[in-house]
Image (cartoon, rainbow, N blue to C red; front, side, top):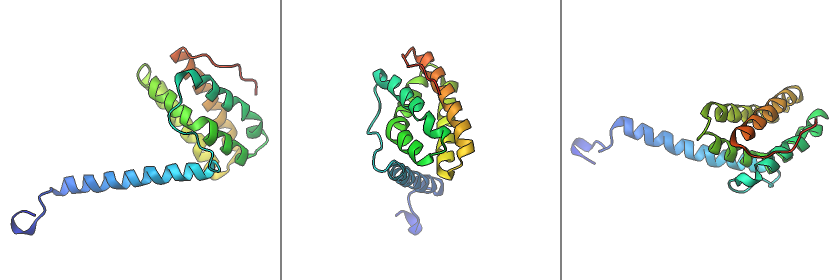
Length: 150
């Protein structure tokens, strides 16, 4: 405390610190929600560049579940095999093509929102967009990826 019983922190600094704390708690909570959505099968840690093709393959492999309107199966695949990999791809991609990295994260987020709402119609269109943007991202990074026939 400083003179007059006032905190030595300015009002703006205190608000910033509170916002940072709330955002940190929210990030931890969202990680827990994602883990619950995946039935406890969420990917651990960042995905290595040599595994980027497997992330894309998992996106492709979930296509039939998307088309069948099975958001539970899609969510398990997405949060268990794809989600962390997309973050790793976007992080590396941001170094060479920030707008494309942003597109990838927006597409990933749209799929997350569709899964949260169980909106099967929107999920299919968002999934297709995520496949398209993911392929562009891997091409931009020069990373190999399998053909996807959905």
